[in-house]
Length: 298
Ligand code: ADP
Ligand code: ZN
Image (tube, rainbow, N blue to C red; front, side):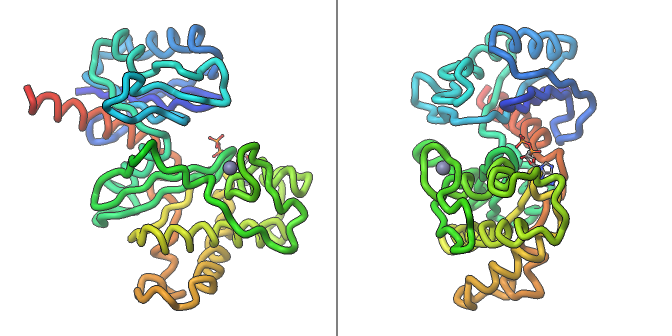
């Protein structure tokens, strides 16, 4: 049996075919133009395979309220052409298979929980630090949706006194995490792409402090058993020990768990075990889960 996975991103749409267990077999990628241009390309790709279900991990914000008449819509996206677009219904009606949808980071969180860095735990937070910052939360073995879905990337931080861009660059909030610590924020502050920065560039110390503030907030509010940090900026491996050390210092020994000892934090704040495949794997698992639950209901 084959499952389809769509990673819907602001710049590209990655379509994959895989197994219900999350193994990827085929992949194709299309630029994200308008829905009228891009949806037919996606449909053409999936039509070539006999898929039994589709899982979508999408950029947001999304309407994920099952009772809403606009369930599965991309809502007020900065990508104007996709605002209020019913991505779930459109693909379900064209492909004639069950379609599951969640945010891209929730899909990644599901995969890391089921078969990655969070395997065996009941709770996990997955955060991607890239063009934006977003987080998916698993609690008691289940993804957290709540009112809409968590917006971990926009938590408000205390700006560092040495920061030359203390307000950040988010158009909605002053000094939110994404505005201060996303890839574009690093680039704007220092006038240099983070890809090109050497390990000893002062940008990384500041970045680690902001990501440590985020970890501390997540630990204090959610008490997750593991925090997974992925995305382009986290390709800088040297960030991990810095983030762990600042997290340890900021917690001040208050939270009494051995897992938060400095020597143990390398098992607690970790890169994704599935690497770049967390999102696609999660979308496959979501598609398979929906299919099985519909079959059980008959
Ligand atoms: P997206 O968030 O768009 O899906 P990424 O997770 O790759 O994609 O994030 C892109 C951002 O990450 C850009 O701002 C880019 O400068 C930054 N980035 C990508 N690769 C690296 C790297 N190796 N080191 C530091 N920053 C990187
Ligand atoms: Zn913000």
